[in-house]
Image 1 (tube, chains in turn cyan, brown):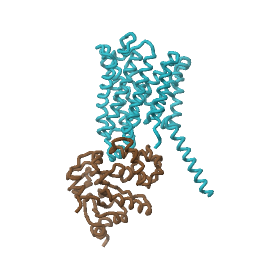
Image 2 (tube, helix red, strand yellow; image 1 turned 135 degrees about the horizontal axis):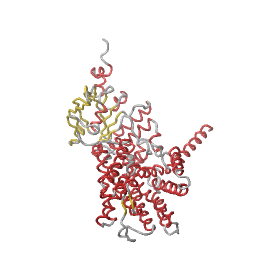
Image 3 (tube, chains in turn blue, red; image 1 turned 180 degrees about the horizontal axis):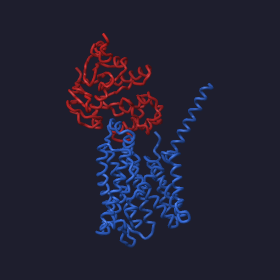
Image 4 (cartoon, chains in turn yellow, cyan; image 1 turned 120 degrees about the horizontal axis):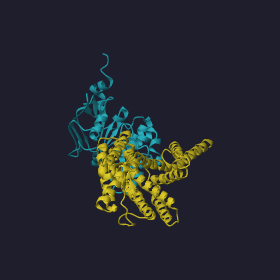
Length: 333
Length: 240
């Protein structure tokens, strides 16, 4: 058995990212880093259910929205600190997830049907947010009531504290994924063949539901961070299809069903998107999306299993070459 | 007299208009190899699916060590000590051979490290040590069959239900597999569904014969081979 290098890589990555905090970076570089870590965090949450267990959701923005609106409404209406609102949002997201996950898993809904269901869920949340406009501000969205810098109220005037907070969130989520070793193996088996997994004594529904609930909880926490950071949310940006799709893309390109895949994907995709948008967005509108599309197509053609599959592919190539060399040698002898 | 480990009592299963299993009863003794044979569509695999909880029985009872197990889900039945293999081997194709075995070891291990220690042992039993790092998808038929058996063994079952493990193997490979099964019987109770007569006659202590979902015969291999009802089920009545 090869030693597990994940904790080492994770440790180095965390220390390096923590050191970045002390660099005198321009504001927009900091913004990109925060956004990258936010997507890495959301992707890590998404990955548990959709990457490891293979139940592909394209509606995870529903849970981002539930998290964001729950903490925002609790703060705006009752003055409850977003730290508590964040946990409440997480719990609420788990309940929403159970409403769709339990029947889906119980009756074996998977593949495209599950994905369609997840899209429908996000649409429902989106429409509910618009419908209850007296509370949510409808399509106009809602602003976070301003408070001067306060850790207790999760609001800061500079970007630095947000960076540290999302770094901690991300680290916790990746660490959690790493710690869930047994569940990860079970989920992979379930993804490959749920009947064969059940025959080996793995409780399929229980493990799927655990993965789905943790996934929803984490993503909802990301929602609270989103609203605290941007100070404004509207149903389109936070419960829309684009956000769901972006979370999924980051993971798929990085390597779904791997611990660091979402992080790697995020560090590749988010800075590129942002930089392209900032440099080309004004002069040639739309070109950044065009280039982004080309990048995606190249990834899908050459790295369908994501960037984290590169070492495996290289190993397989080497093994093939070695075996060919051996066969050649045997032929000569 | 050895103990009856598994008792199947008068079970039936109907799929729409097809009576797949019709009032079948039999038992399996401790450390015995029971062979189940029958023509295609006789209901052999259905029987396995019913015992292991993949389908629920319509009527009857299945008792394991004095406890009713019908109505339990497959994972719970596996935890009780009954594991089955699938007729068409179902490796987790995206996982390595070692991880396939590891997944099977996990449910009954307290720690992941404990399961990891057993992987090598199981790989050795089924002769897949050299393939440990290969993907499930890259295996040959024989290797898939071995992996299927390895996964079942990794769950450390007391009763092993083997569904056509010989299909697709060459005669020499069959001999190897037979030796392996005979070795396993020392510690386990085994039920074998098999098409290859040479195998079933050689390894079984007792045989039951199914046809159209019903049990039509039961006895020692020699008795079964000479039973006119069995011959008729397999070959037809003839033209005389």
